[in-house]
Image 1 (cartoon, rainbow, N blue to C red):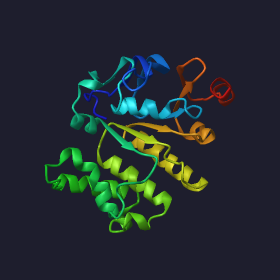
Image 2 (cartoon, helix red, strand yellow):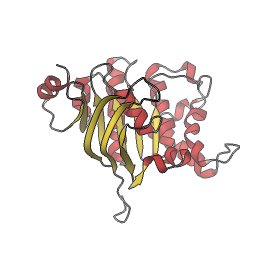
Image 3 (tube, rainbow, N blue to C red):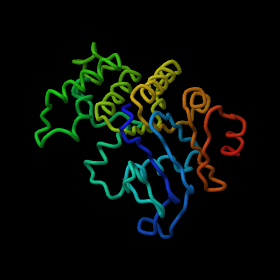
Image 4 (cartoon, one colour):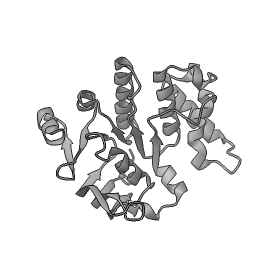
Length: 250
């Protein structure tokens, strides 16, 4: 990274996350945090019991719902003040289920990541095409360029979805349970890939996962949702696995 380049920092400031009175009969707090700061190159796992609010946290970061109070800032800008297009240039998202992009070639799927930069006709420029080619090479997908996504294995399809997010060139990538439908070997392959991307691309990457052992092995940081205290707990390597499990999964 250029020494003069501003370092990205994602900040949670006095954040309270839950459900508002607008959608529910009464306000319902899931959890809160005082201040959390995240830097480029971190690979962060979000863990917690089922129903603790992992998806709600991601939806709040993505701007799909408002926090009950507090603020999220990125590059010293309040997240809610950014336009949808600006948000897409800062943050990419890989859902847990593959849907809505069936019957595309791998090339066209990855190229969808360039949408925030293309014109109304979604025509790719030479730069866009170069980015897509670079991503395909980086992920070992060059031989899959013209393959239909429905013909891919679960592991290959997940890597192609990561390729779409990479082509977006966002500073932050969020993946909702990226290993949920993969066998053990492919789970390790995907997590190693994400770890490498975080370091080599200097990207901040978040995943949610129930696979604690692999999170402890591959991630540099764990954010745990403690449903009992309704707090976000912050753990960095080296992890005390027993302590984390005891605090979060009582």
